[in-house]
Amino acid sequence: MANWIGETFTSDAGWTHLEDLVDIGDRMAGSEGERRGAELTRDALDSVGARDARLEEFDIQGWTRGTSAIRAGDTVQDCIALPRSPSESAAGELVDLGYGLPEDFEATDFEGKVVMAASNVPDHYDRFIHRREKYYHAVEGGAAAFVFRNHVEGCLPPTGSVGTEEDPIGDVPAVGVSKEVGARLARRWDGERVEVEVEADVHDATSQNVHAELGPDTDEEVLVTSHVDAHDIAEGAADNGAGTAMVVELAKALAAREDELDTKVHFIAYGSEEVGLVGSGYDAANREFDSVKAVLNSDGVVRGRTLSFYTHGFDALDSAAEGVADDFGHPVKTIPEQGPHSDHWPYVKWGVPGYHVMSETGSEGRGWGHTYADTLDKIEVRDLREQAVLLTELAVRLASDDFSVDHKESEEIAAALEAEDKAEGMKIIGDWPYDE
Figure (cartoon, rainbow, N blue to C red):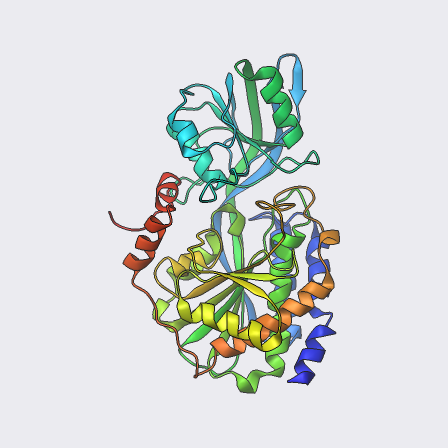
């Protein structure tokens, strides 16, 4: 055991790949930069010993950022368009809804107005409310435009897509503003007329998933996954260059332990996660779920030192992660709830056992994610290597004949979402896949 641990803890494969990804620049879904990132990931997987490294293309709705602005009084306030906002202008009375909780929308008449809501929720609230849920509450109530206000200081406007699978371009113009600009808008122009302008190029585009394998050629397989794409405003180091670097690091470590794998390990680095889980959705729609033993999805790893695992009510997954932590004397956090916001979800929502692996940051919400500040200097190579050791061992155990985990019926996943008060929001944003 000591040899592979030492090799993993001194490996440069993942970190070098992370540097290569962030140095590309723009890796927006459907862009040349995203394709370059996929090609580099394919080549990195091949170089560390995974077999049949390849790209699989699919069509997506392309969207390229233009200029955007909020005109308030005789001023122009800084903002950035939310990806897949329509290229439109709209004006109306500014309504600051604070956190933008469902009850805030229910209690307010904002038809024809410009709605502003924060990127966080109050400490007392019992669940996270996703950006798209706030956006579609605004759309449902007839808002003219939507302003998404960051809760993190530092003049950092947040990004993040709108749109649905059926209608990938949103209904009304949407922009992100920094905490500071949001406070200024609320103080000076709440109740006054403002105008939101978004310019963007909407076009057909192509994205791609990266595939490679290790282990025996079994019908059953463990999926080890991440996403290559990132928002165009930053390097995408934490979200999700680090996750894709982790996949490369795991492939290198598992190649050295290939004779221990009883089940095929299938590495997939998806495209177009940031615009609606498009790459993983494409793969899931073309995969037999009975063949997937488990999904190990890294999205948000390395941001902090301690790993956290959404285990989606699969007790065996919870026990496996805790077992690795106990054996290595390294703390982890397991969360048995449903987590419907990354590339594991197109599988898990139909009952496939899956992890969403992140790391504890000690901050609320995304922190630096989805802002200009998602840069390499926020990431520590030590954390990448330590977490790679734990996740390598976990992957070996998932692929072992000694490990078993039952699939769930989709009705059980739906019931868990209802019990956790997540169903209503998913229905509003068009992400509820179950028959009523």
